[in-house]
Image (cartoon, rainbow, N blue to C red; front, side):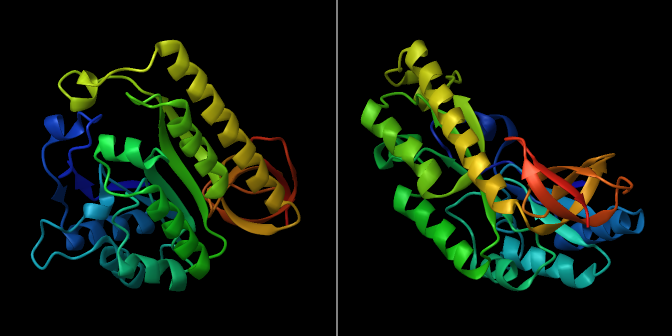
Length: 282
């Protein structure tokens, strides 16, 4: 089940039109979120995903300015019957100490973070008006792995942002392996009318497409590295459809054996097909 905890965004990345359409960040009240998740758990949902446009900004507009980490801790404490809580895409610039503590101490918080990175070159990040640097992204990944070694990472990356040179692109490309990213969402840059990036000198479309293809290939190689590391492990996975399940670290598994959709089962990973792990009921 998906629970929207926040909408809108207070930031003005130069490529993004969302704040113009949805306005500034608005947070749902913690009590309402907890009650909604409690109802979902009572209905039999085994996993809840917290969603929003910029969920790490949750709470900034609420009294006392609570943090996303505090919300996560509250949900896990007050809804003990929920087996798994997952976060959707988060901003690498805003992970708070409480959220880091939850990752370290709460096994029910899924060890998977999908980071809104967008680029791996500092000049491009600056022109995007992002609030993190390349080093910040790598430092965050290292910090999370230090407290939760089994965490897997995904990322959003834009190929061919205006003014991007070959060298700048190579910095983004190499970030995939340096950060150990396993699940990429790659977007060829597409100008949004009214945004600052739409007025910047564009990269030729054929170059944009070629760079996107190279990023997707790097993402596929990262996924294969991740899948190979799963072979021989026994993982806890939520059955989504007959014969298909999703591990806590977001790995998709095709499995043999009896298990009903909605169950969380232990699966022994025997191999992979380059896209998902192959497993059998343990």
